[in-house]
Length: 485
Image (tube, rainbow, N blue to C red; front, side, top):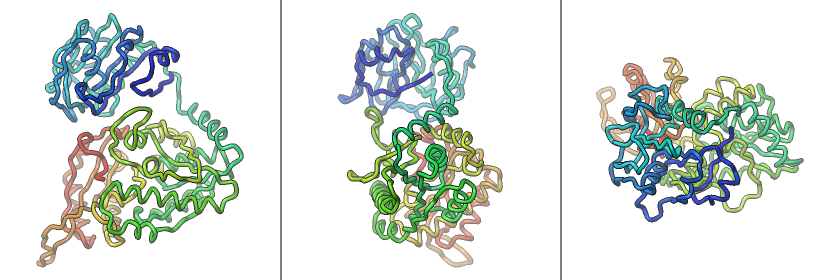
């Protein structure tokens, strides 16, 4: 089974030419009443192909086919859906009451003619509808995210039960296909790989090494905003365990000098992205036949950084995709660009990457620069490195690291009064952020034990000079993002 993402304005002729067995209209940030809202041709609903509308996709379907959509009544985060219909193609074999994940600003108040209401929630009376005669379906919530309990089963019911799909694709086949594509793109040239030690770049490096062998050189850049001990650990692991050609570009002073006085998050990302490219080009100039730069860009990076194959809301720029300068002497190789994080981990296991690296929490390309709110200085980096190291160490000691998806400390540009040793202090606030998720497109805050949080806060306040207060972030995504900047 193969799936492809196409923009909303794809012609009906192009859709017919692909002979799809089913279509999904995705969610999006717009309202059907926005003048610039995405619009597909009405003919799409009469192609004789099953169509599933999700969130905005459902609202659009109802609006165009004669239903009623009410603007300005949102529902965000966890919600309870109640299946009402005795028979439902989407909810076959599933519980009547189930937890779903909502993220919509409008809601359907009247189903279009021919549709039956199959489920409701407190915030969306028509949270699911079906027109089985025309094979048209709508879901107001998001079945594709981890926090919808039976979301995968709902999608399977649509794909296998309604569309007749056959699930014969595997990540093992992806590895072999990606290797062939890399070789075809690169030819006899040399590739420079940006290795950070994170899951994405580590998997990418091993994949490139399998495809290219000695025609790959990895460059590890010390940008001055890495985690404590990161440089030594990554250099040692990939040189000794995986026998990769890894070169260290120690550029901490350059990055920190360029970040001096900068507080706006997008500007930080641009500076770091541009500096990365500058360093890579300088390093690549020393390597014979180096004409390609490999990046560990994955699908969520593309969605959140720019419009991916069609319009989407730009949430943030990622240095892999949003920080590139207009002029670049190296062509890009991005072998993981269509994978989600859980798929990247599976590819890593296929390639023999150690569990310690496969299970690593994500670390942003701009590093601690976007976890230090306000100006980035060497002193503030040192404070955050210490606090973050304590937190991650205790998370591992308590056996909580592998059961959470991402965990880190944020240093805030806020100072509060405290009392330490009978002395008044006026130091910075640190925020702890821990989330659970599988795809990183949505996430929920982790319900960590109170005694664990108390231990971490106590250690940070007592051991890290410059922090006298610790708070815990309990915001889901949406409405928040995982990172603070």
